[in-house]
Length: 250
Image (tube, rainbow, N blue to C red; front, side, top):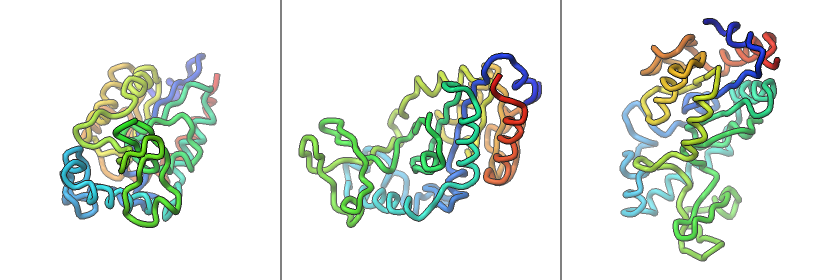
C-alpha cells in the first residue's frame, strides 16, 4: 500500500493527526522535559502531579505561570500552518488533530478541529465548581499570585493541565478519530508517553496508512508505513502539497 493508494478511494479521505513536543520545539518553545528527565529544572513529581499541587501549590502555580508567559514569545512554524492547510483541503468532518501539547500554536496556525488531550496552558479550572476560563490577560500574568474563581469565589484555580496520574481529555473522541481514519500522521513525538504512544499501533491495526515525522526515530517507529527523519517544518509542507495535488477530496 502507498500514499497514492490511500488517496485513490472514491470516498472522502479521513485524516487524523497526532502531534507532540517536537513540533512546538521548532517554534522555539522550550519543551517541558529535557534529556535529564527534568522539566525546566524541576522534577516531574514537583510540578506535574496532583500530589505536588496538594503539597506545594505555590511552586506548581509559579511553574505554569512561567510557561504561560512563554507563549507570547513564540509563533507557529511551517508545520503548524501545513496542518491547517491540510484540514482545509479535506472534506468537513473528516479531519481531527490530536495534540499532546498544551500550547496554543495549532490554534494560531489555523487549526480548528483540535483535541488538547493534555489540557491547555491558556486555561485554568476551579476544582470546587469546575468553572474554567482563559487566564492570559495582563492582570493574570503580572505576578505569581493565585487567581480566585470568578464563578464561586474559591481562593485559587488550578492549571487546566492533565498531570501524571490523571485521565487525558476526550479519550473516546480521539480514539474514535484514530479508528475511523485512513491516513494517520504523527508529528514530533517520542513514542514514550502513554496513552498517546498507543494511538499509532491502534491506527495501524485498523488499517490506516501511517506516516511519521520527527528529528529522531521514536520508540514505536516500526509501526509507520513511512517515517521521515528531520524537522517537521521542512518535511511536512511538501507532503501536504503532495496530498492536495493528489486531490484528497473526491
